[in-house]
Length: 124
Image 1: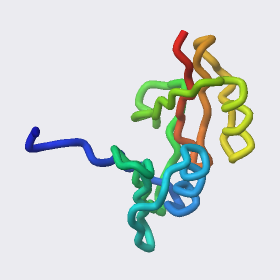
Image 2: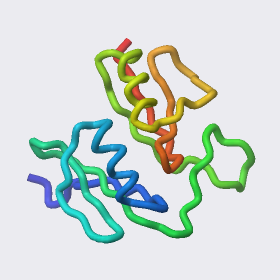
Image 3: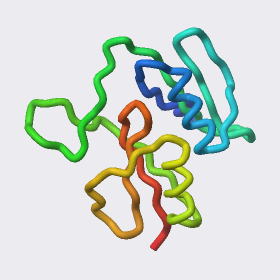
Image 4: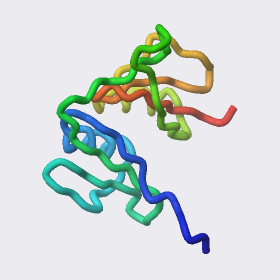
């Protein structure tokens, strides 16, 4: 076993608990740990988790990139699904916003409630 391994990805938000709730519903994950300003969620059967940290000065990323030197997307989550149409509708019902710009037919780009971009995709 490697002496290092990725355990979680941390997303900042104005409200860590609110954003964690969105991803709990979207992904079917469970809460693994939580504090007043931080939440760790992950798959029920183990694996890499997602953490959310409250950051009062949080500024949502911008996607697609508009102007050099301004706030941009730093990372995004890619979530594979079996049925893109059904999962697109479910993501919107859970609170995601479909991005105006959609660069690929087998991918849908969204913004979570804190403004982080993420993608739902199917194998083409």
